[in-house]
Image (cartoon, rainbow, N blue to C red; front, top):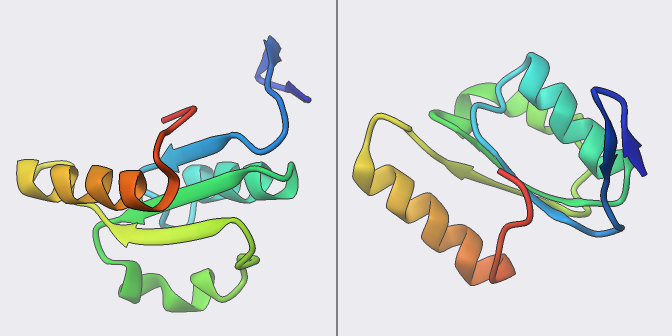
Length: 93
């Protein structure tokens, strides 16, 4: 699969993406595109419950959602631990 905004980048099927700040907007669209491409996404936002109506629109297969506040070192460590426990590694972040 070629990624449109990086034409020379080719990724294989089932890569694991960690995407921060996945409230509605550009990053959430990137999240959806990765899921449509058959990839697994660990999506994060400061308040996952606050965007529940949006979360319902995302297909569940391949998606994990967790809280992440990038201004908090403890929150960053917890999000990485969550990803490590569920996936074991990250291909793209």
